[in-house]
Image 1 (cartoon, rainbow, N blue to C red):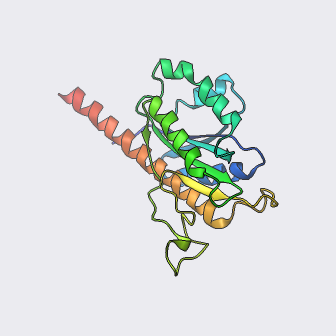
Image 2 (image 1 turned 120 degrees about the horizontal axis):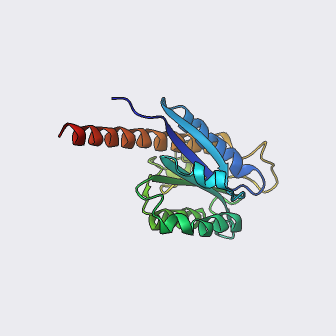
Image 3 (image 1 turned 30 degrees about the vertical axis):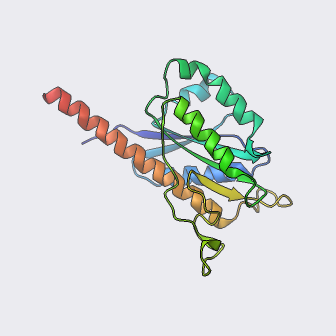
Length: 205
């Protein structure tokens, strides 16, 4: 069964470049799935091309964690999506999220949960990270483990405050972001395949 080309949009804000690296890793993961194309979008630019691009099969939201929540720029984007919400424009699309902060904890969960609520208000279906916790979860863990920060809702990354985006986030966190992108892309492909099968069944009666 032929499935139309699928796009996974990565709608993100990055204050200093660290979250942009994480977003690029998500895009790399999505692009690795045959039949799926990643589309990186900076939500600091609220123009018509952004809203058109977010008609994608799935949207992965990304923001740095500032003061325990998403950035003001990301929140401005969320609030600007009210007309889309009113028209149920993202209803039943897939959603996922990622975030980065300087602290190992930094209340990143709160930022991810705010993205989850945002997606739920739009009627979207959330795709979690789908990985067991790594690193200090067990005594033989490694800081190079996937999901080393032990998140479940989305992909977490940590970038020391005195390192630039050319050095952080580290490899493990970028691999975790890549995993999320690939996972969302595969889920989007399955959803599109199911929709095509449903349409074909309706036609044949």
